[in-house]
Length: 546
Image (cartoon, rainbow, N blue to C red; front, side, top):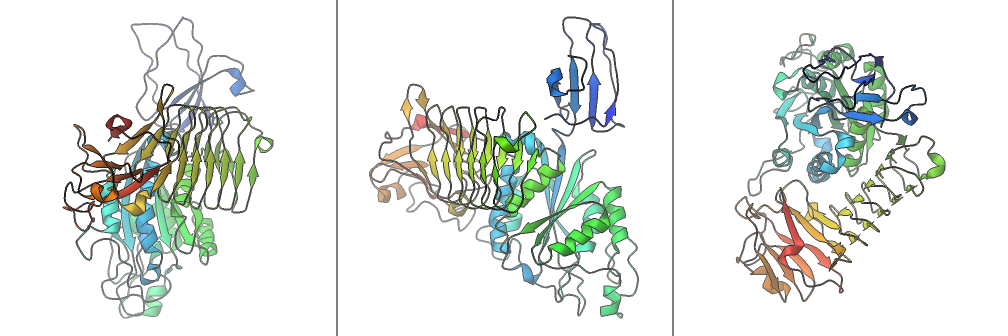
């Protein structure tokens, strides 16, 4: 995708093997247009790992007069620092169980190697939470206005454990309690999230703080009005949490966000969305997205917000039911479509290019074109159809139907009971949640046309992040005739020929597959079944990846 230039700089590069031209862009805009005149047969360009180059003929830009054009877009591989700031007051108790399942899953999706053009290839994640002031009428004993949980990290397992808790250890993980009154400390929490150096924001990173809440926020003066004995001084806008200090005003939060280059993203339930729309208007920055009543669509709104912040979306849908096809696409080239909520139909047949489509919430139907397309169904039950290219189909949550059609396709059902059809070509069926195996996270998929013939050799790809007992030196594959025999097999991956069922046996010959009751007893179980035409699986049908 080519972005319009914000700054233009002209440099003439001579073909001199002994010398280098070094240009420092650190003080310039992130998107630069560089016409390069080359007076030799070749030239070299050395890049920092965070930079991205796109070469383009004049047809990419109708105003261009030269054929040797170089576009440098340092945002396309941006360093993204993402902090999840979670409301843990009592009113969030009904949303929290689903959030515990979906938040780790969205971290895995955002770091997918297939989606670096959308979300970047250098992401770190942090966690923080808030309740309210621990004083009467405002909150309850043990409440807090802000608390860092995890500094920015690439460790998805740490994020999940912090949110969901450690198996077998009661009281671990996020718990929603406290917050006596309806407004909470969202503003003060956002102020401290912006000023907290221990979070570990990286120099030059794009910084987003996702604040998930179902309540309105306290403003300056609320504390003293509610409890003048406990709250005795105005907030001074610094990063120190003082017990007798009032809530900050919006201008103080705005100053902190701007000074630290942070974009707030409010994940708000529908009953308070208008409140946060007004706050974003007052702050002069930010995004507001609507959470379903049980936060089922949290992955959808987080993906959309990051893509929006990265300025890669070419077609943005609404929350209604939409039909998007060639007649709606007026700009040539690769399309990045976020359809939004609603039951959408997206048909890219006849649209040249390699496209990305995110269906968002709702029951969506997506058809591919002739290129190498990537589809993410989003939440709910979706139908994804690849074209003749090598496509990547990602189901996300819901019971989805994925059809690769022609080409060497990648199919990943994610959670739910998904129907997978690879079609012609050498297809890969991916099982990976980014964290240790649970049936809720992975679901049980049906692989309907697994093949092992010349030109159609399919593969089942298992991630060690999910199938944690699979070693780097290999794994034990076993074939048994019944599901009961699978429970006591010594194999790590066990195929039952009687039911054409595939099991992850996390505890070896111990009866059962593993309960997940403790770290010493990881969870295992059924994760796929196969159509009657499937050849008996063998060890070489599997690939193990990190």
